[in-house]
Image (cartoon, rainbow, N blue to C red):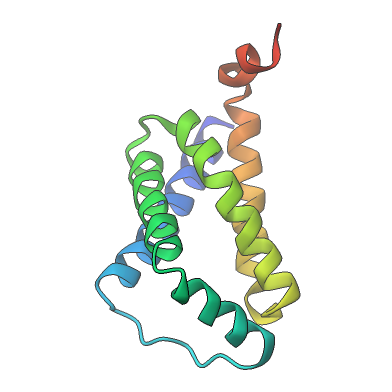
Length: 124
């Protein structure tokens, strides 16, 4: 189970690193958006701070997952972002849903594996 934890942690970390680095350095062309997702994407870009903040958190959490340091904190920080990625893909762009589901399940798996670190949060 320890090897599975390391594999999941590193894969999620690499995915987050790739997504954030490609956003900041414009390594990938912007995908064509249509319909409701285009309106949603325009709103995200119009806020001017939301996408850079989310991608910065992805970058920090990706580094934490790959290095294995501060994984407990990174799990908590990245959970709202993975939930939003899952919902955006479910409701607006279903073609990316398999990766979003794997990312979300991997995040839940890591929370489960590091659950002893979270126990103090839920005790009186």
